[in-house]
Length: 200
Image 1: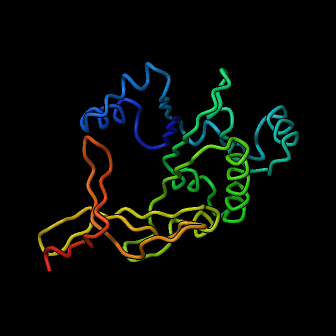
Image 2: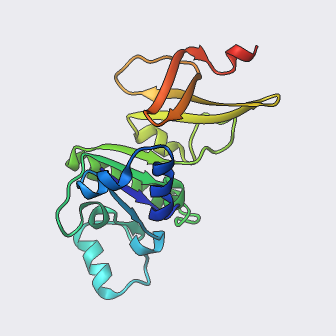
């Protein structure tokens, strides 16, 4: 598994995993987990890039503005993870200021790249607003095979974690928001307990 962060540091991510009792050191030492943090500027090119960079982009038939995640995911050791997590698409999209179409083209390339790997991919994005049915960019929802929303909602003086499957391509799924909890055993979902139902 490869976790690529543009948000939190590797140290903080490991600390969070420790707090849930997930033993990240064992996973990392065994080679089953790699956590890397980058700045979006580390993989961002524009028209002011060096000649060599521009030629490299042209060789890959990329657009003038592109973010190339391939070397960061594969690495020099040709590591090919079966699970990839990117946190977050929101951070990546912020570099495409005023460039919605360029970001859409980038997403197309990114999803095609994942297809060549055959990996299971989790791409995290912030919701546009609490009442929205879409992530930061609707293209993300359109291209993804599944769209899952996580909530930390408040009702009166109570907060409850909840989950909703908005989309699951090729599969039937519950179309309701249900309660969930994160534990040392992982994510536990209560499919028969709608969020806040026990407080009504």
